[in-house]
Length: 172
Image (cartoon, rainbow, N blue to C red; front, side, top):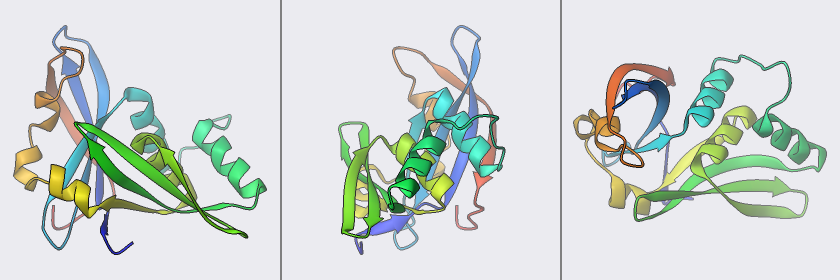
């Protein structure tokens, strides 16, 4: 996968909706070392919480969906080799999970949040297509107001707090 770059950071950004209700939303920043460009995606609250818990190695009392998926894959003799944010259509990102089995490799389509949550649990590489970087790449400073500018369903957001979760990226 020479046409990919690896994710260098994940941040949890707490936002406030226009009605004053706070809810976490995650922004993933993907950094391409060769071009210095970043891309960002907004996730829903549940996906953010699951990623944050997995990165903090906080195990739930019962397995969550991504834990179950990983256990099922291992039981079937498959391993997650990597996930890739593989394409962008409009403002919608798409991902591919690359599985390795005794019969060879298998690519499975997925939502980026599901793919990355699975990769975190499987300790697999997380990649982004250079085509996606070319289409959505921005300088780091251009993403400072990202959640504020990307409200969903007519909502407006205001950033309350930002916390880097994984891993530290000295170039961001």
